[in-house]
Length: 245
Ligand SMILES: [Zn+2]
Image (cartoon, rainbow, N blue to C red; front, side, top):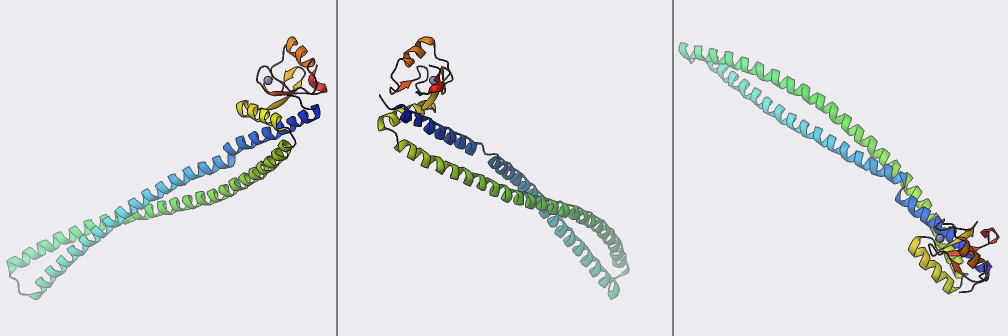
């Protein structure tokens, strides 16, 4: 294939655009802003789990409180009924003694239940504080996440702009090249990621391998408009004054 050296040199511009595109793709895949979003999403999940765990504890304590309150109520009503009966004067001495005895038991029972209730209510208060703490932690992570997503979106938008610029540059550079040369470039680019490179100081700019004397002599004897390729990696070798020929 024969192409004017000035046209061949345009391949280096195209290769530079492709290098930039590869850089953009790498950056997109390894975006630190995305890693931060991922980290915060993980933290949000564990904060949510922690908040739910505290809610379950609160629900359990509320159920315990309702149960104890019900028990205290029942004891109180029973004592109330006993007292009414005792005051009615309609009971005999034996029953009166029994009622007094029961009343004593009911009062002790009520005292125990009220102590228990107090203890559970204190635990509920502590859990309520935990719950508020968990909620505050969750809100903080959610705010951080919104901010991190905004920074991520900005970086992605910047990459999109750079990417579009590359696509346009690629199109105009490619349009100025003979179809056959461009096809060869694209094929090599598709294979190894580098379609063309500068031959510089006898070294291939794509694979960085230094060509042996025989190869350099062969290339030096090739007409300037001949398209030569690296014998190692297949990239199109663009020759300039710096090529060391
Ligand atoms: Zn090479």
